[in-house]
Image (tube, rainbow over all chains, first blue to last red):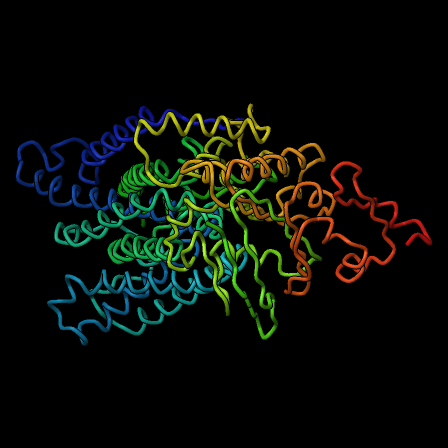
Length: 338
Length: 267
């Protein structure tokens, strides 16, 4: 069987245009009405506030988080050589959520309110994601080979443990800054302000740059750690940098949007189907498609039950799980490649 | 200009996998490593490739300690076909072979790389396979696709270099076994060097300049085929006490016939 690939340049152009279109669509839709004057034509100040102060930061958050989760998922699947390696599925996001909640509950005591608001919460998220990824890497790699069962079982168990710890913190603390359990387990992009975007954007963007720089070595790692080393790859350094990049991308994203599942697992698989497993295309493609998917999902989350705001994780799971099942059935008895 | 292993000892959990092993591979040479399962052949190969640092002893490649070479420098000097050919990503055979050249290369070099890949795929008998999905290949085809990748890695810099092969014909039919060993032989003939783990003693005897017999982590014997493949060695190392060895009329190289092993009374 020959490999079939979409031509890269037209596919990426189309994907970028679709992202722009989805952003415009999302900007024009919401609970207060459709169009560019949602506050009413006679009240431009309110319309302006709704579009630029409420909808736009939320869309930018969706783009950043979606791109970060998509690219991080692609890289983790390559790193672990495992199609299930998604920050949400194997507990990395739960670790980040725990780190962020710990910082919200305890951080003010440790560092004072000023520092906390700006850096404490994303730092907590990063620490949680980093510790979880590090433990999983240690636990699942035996002599350069990743054990799928160990990775998934350990990831699910540790993720459940982290979620339980988060739950205990939430029930014990009565902190207004601490959102509810639904936010941390299902994710939400609601209520985001520009100042949070300012904090998140540098993390996500630097993570994407780093991930792109790791594309070639990640291709070699698909052949196994020994083969990669024989071809000149500094395996230890590449794995460490992947850990850093995933941490940079997932930790702050979870701190500001909770645990949004399925983006990191569905998106890279769809990109792989279209343009193949080469990370030089897989990583930017997953970032673009992840952003597109999350912008559309969040638009749906805002509109589906007006006036309430559905957690976006419900939408991504609702869209993602059927696609995942379809991918499984489509491949028949073959394994799904990383 | 040699690959030199000096008094290599590797211990794991108190057990010596390799015990004071010394050997050299010089340009122009084809050296075969034979020995029973668990003798330490693959460990020896990984030490020779610089993948595994020995507990004692050292490895020199062209006069430099292998530990002082960067992974990229080593990748230009030696390439190794491992037994790990599990690649689940759906790359094409051509893409897999191109991975042999890991570093970035300009547009001018791309043409040269394409030629090299095409030529090498042809040599391993995969000329029409460039677009094929690696995950749909048979075991033997996949092994040859990886061999093409390894050869591309070595040839990109020069025709020379050390070609390390860990059971390169384990998945091949008899014609492809000869094809691959001839390729390795030709690599040595052009000034490169080859170190190969082989299980078929007849192939080892027919192709190798020198044979190293490894047994329980030690070098049992080392030398040309007719001095190494003897009834005594077969008995001591493999526990085959009743084999009959023949010698080729022209080359004088030894061979053994499998049915000698089942004939009663022959010794």
